[in-house]
Image (cartoon, one colour):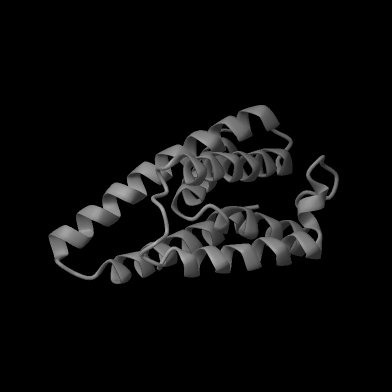
Length: 155
């Protein structure tokens, strides 16, 4: 049980980095392996959900690179990370017949943690390494995608 709840938190951290990468990864895991078939989150296992979340995640990855994109710490971005972290965490908890509410709470908290840690790490790395923000943004994308794949591969 503790392992699943840790993964619920960690998928929330991924949502904090890139809000739509986490639910896209969960949707593909649910579609490909049927981890949510007999749960209240079975809709996440549809091909439509996997495609929609993936398209939205790709759009987010692109718009994150634009200088006009607002900070993830402003209310719309932070709220999106809380919601998608909570959704993704609850799905992982449901996949292992654990408390959906606890999975949602841990995913939402992970979303907040990931948003703040990701923001400050990115800023700090850009300043310390004296590299363009784009380089660190692409690295953060890779961490989010790789982390999401690692987490959902455990289910």
